[in-house]
Length: 315
Image (cartoon, rainbow, N blue to C red):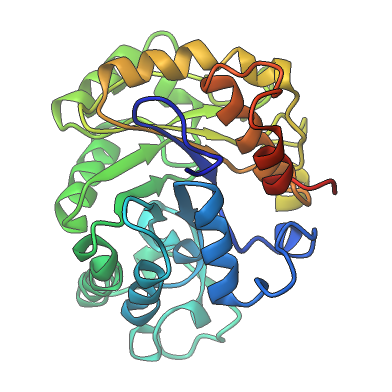
């Protein structure tokens, strides 16, 4: 039994098992600090993880096959869509050489609009091929499309979401970073659009009251899956470096408020993925462990103390 296991089909984990802050924190024991050892150790503690490396570079079929081989049956990967497919920029060097626009420095940033239609089609094909081994092994949960903060609500954006669903060739989930999708006057329209297409709307936890804060809307829009991502409650959300935006240690009380909401999602969907994206040493795995305890009805963490202590050593 994994530490992340909870009643029903609620799977708890983190948004990366390779984050440098986690790798250097000492959470991985001696002998489990190589690529294979880290993944096997993580998968012995939690039943789900998000692969975030695919946001920065196209996934590799070989690597995806290794991920499947190194994890037990029932373990699930949610895979982030490549940045250029979600309205973000990417380094030229992140593209395969034959897809790079001529004359650009590998360190330069580019947008999808700078690619030819044929190159974009090839980009989609290589992405889907890259995750195919996970899907074939039954390890692929969903492909997460985390759209950029400038992906504004509107007809063209909705058409692009439909295009993503068609081109991905596998179930997708959508997270919005533009708050306009979930304002009180638009949230019903957004949820209805996704519900008609059976695309999960990713619920997010961030500090509220900031210009970039996304409302923490937890709606089931697909019968098969609901997803919640905890980004931390740092006041620099939407600004500053990645480390600044996501640095946060969740308290038990902060997580308690989500327990009934996660359980309500589980009542209306076949599976719920609860993923922690708060970086800073062991903050994400500690929060995932605490949430697992709360969902399992262990509010004080007294039960299974030895297993919890093993999974969450002192930092």
